Image: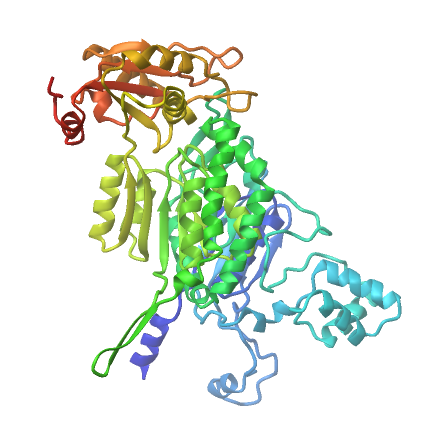
Length: 624
């Protein structure tokens, strides 16, 4: 029996402590701990508080029942047996401490363990029946109007059908208001929250990560945006001005594990949520994206540098995927074939995998995250998203909109970082599938490491695209296409055209191609009538210039040089003008490597089928 009870204890669901962090004030810290605890299946209370310095929070099942009756010649065992049977106290050791340090409140976990089972239904806890500040105000107004408690409760349930309070709770509130010993305060409600939008009647305090200057990009763990406890961070720079837009802290391994646990814990309930309910969230999500598309586009331009028109296109291409997710119900259907052979029927069903992850590049800050998590969560999976550390703002904004649309806590989580977090995603046994978009080397590494762990891996790599121009091609249409595909978004996209193969020679095209390229307006992405913005970083600009010079050193001809471009008013920007190289061969480094900049490599051939075969097969030289 003892062995069996120990096994049952070990198999009980683990309840994680809230991730440590830094907060603007005491109330925000308590709110963070309370919300996370509810998501894990326990409730916290204030054990000790020195309002301006420290607050100690513990599990509401902490402590022991004290029998205050005097002993009457009974053994200690009999006294223990006669203790109050209704006590929920188990002497739970959980304890979290918040201390004020240098104007901010810092949360640390003294003991993160529990010695009891998590609550199966949080609505059964007494705290779920607490009334909100707005409801207390309404009770006060309706009492003064002469309404009775049952009438008051009926009115309250009309506006909030999920209200769990009883007439007894209304009586108690009325009594306390009448006695004058109840100040109206914002009670913490444990009812399921359908939206991240707070009540308009309560004071909204911005979280600490928004009040920093520059702001720190938060993690999203268990439905809450949390400032990481990590000290190292990466500056997100505006490529046109070099101003710091925000700082990205490198998520700690402990915070990453908390995000994984949150996603894993949310999976069983989410997978059992009807597909129609999940679809309705996507319908609301796409509506909210359209509402805030201006903010999303501006955020992308400030962090990435692409023009506002390109940024709008970034969001709209991702929005198409969200719209597709709104119709996934029919795609979730399986198949059934009866009597494939005597007495045998076959059927197939489609089931969610579990916790999935997405690793995003910098070139499409909105579109690629929207490729990943809307489809995954609508199919019933939970998701860990790692945006690019160079432009994470759009991903955070999209996550805020997803929560506002009704996505439950823990279904979508966001972590930040570089190699360590990528390795952790590849190695974690709870992650069942990974989607990656990025360069060849990183894609090959992630594919090998993740597949070795038995994960499903989708690795979308490579940005080396060719165009073949035939001698009889329409001049104007072809030039327009080459300029848009080669120089659009400053060449920083996986669909960018980097190599043009002219059948029959470059001479008929060269002069007009240079004219079209020179006519492009290179400026900051927020300026009017701009065609090209800056590249993402100084390092990217240096790499592009190095590959251009390498081609020249290997014998290529510089047809149009954009390396020394200076934009008035944005002298510190990472600008490169349209650049055209001719005489490029397949053995040059610029041909083999991804340039990821506004550079067109021009090749010329005369024998169509034979020479194209050599180019596509990666021959060192094209036969003359």
